[in-house]
Amino acid sequence: MHCLKDAEAAWDTWVENQKLRFHHVSGLITEQEVVRKERGRPKQDAQPETDTLYVLNLIYTEEEALVQQARRKASRFVLATTLPKEWHNELMDGTAVLGLYKG
Image 1 (cartoon, rainbow, N blue to C red):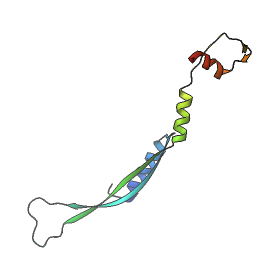
Image 2 (image 1 turned 90 degrees about the horizontal axis):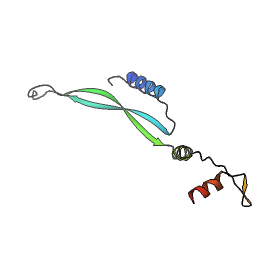
Image 3 (image 1 turned 180 degrees about the horizontal axis):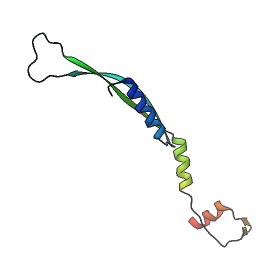
Image 4 (image 1 turned 135 degrees about the horizontal axis):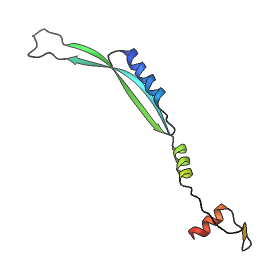
């Protein structure tokens, strides 16, 4: 961007439009000097013109605990059974039924 205000506005707009559940993103706006080159050979004592651009650098981090929790939740499935609550003198809760199913 050519203006610091524009860069900050772009960052604010981007942040408002993101719905990040598993990641954290932070931004840093830095100035970058760019030499403007003219066509042809420069004059002997000519100073090159420079433009100041503002660059948005993003820092991305993953919330590993939330990702693992979502993976565990997504990996669940429904196992329907006709076993009674107690079978062979064992209480048949979800973990026990799944253990019987998987072997």
